[in-house]
Image (cartoon, rainbow, N blue to C red; front, side, top):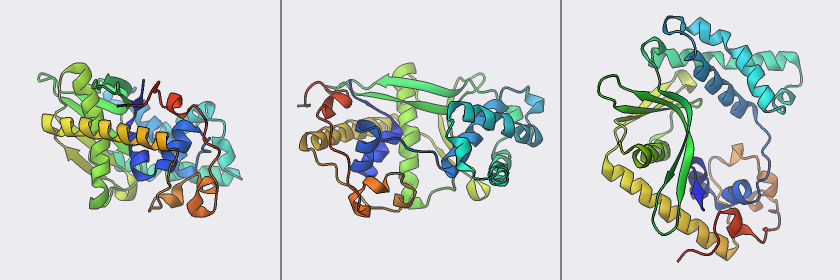
Length: 276
C-alpha cells in the first residue's frame, strides 16, 4: 500500500531524483551538524514538557541539552563523529542555546500541557490508489473546555521567504488532514515555530476546503510518482537547496551517476500494479 509523508511528498515536488534516492534506493544520509542540531533542539523541547509546569524555564531547558545529546547519540552513533575535537563538540552544543532561548520568546511552556509530543499519525486517504498519509507531529495541544486542536511544528531554521511559505503550510496542512481523517475534527490552528535568527511564528487556520485541496494534491503527487516510476526516469531538479543535499555525488547536476534502478521499484513504493 503506498504511503507518503509530508517530507517525502515535498522531496518529490522539489527533486524526483532526491525522492528516488531516499525512498527507493534508501541511500544512507550521514547526519550533518545542522541536521543533528535540529534533532537535539527538538529533543530538548520534547523533554521540557516532562518537567512540572513551574520548572519549565530557560535555565531548565538549557540543562537538558547534555542529556538530550547523549540520548540522540545513543540512537545515532554517527553523531559524535561529526566533531574532530572536543572543542568543536562544545561549540556545536553551545550553538543550540540561542535556538532554545528563542523558543521562550514565542511561547510560555508553563501555560501549556500538550496532549502529545512526537505523535505518530497515519491516515487512510481512500480513493482508488489506496494512499496512506503518515508522519510525526512535534506537538499536539488540546484547548481545555472547547477541545480545539492546535498542531505545533518546530523549525530550527529561520522563517522562509514568502515564496517558500507555501511548502511550510502544506506540511502542517498534511498533519491537519491526517487528524481530520482519524479524529473527525479539523484543527483550529496550525502553528510553526521558527527558532533561527531570533525566531518567528507562522499560524494558519485550516478550513475543510483547505484540507480537501491538500488531499487532492497528495493524490496528484502519488500519480506523478507512479508515472515517473513506470518511466524509469527520475530527473534531478537543481535548486537553492542543492547546497545542503547529501547526494551530490550521485546527482548528474554535479557530475555524479545515480545507482542502477532496482527492478522492484513499484513494490518498493508499496504498489502491486500501476495505478489506472
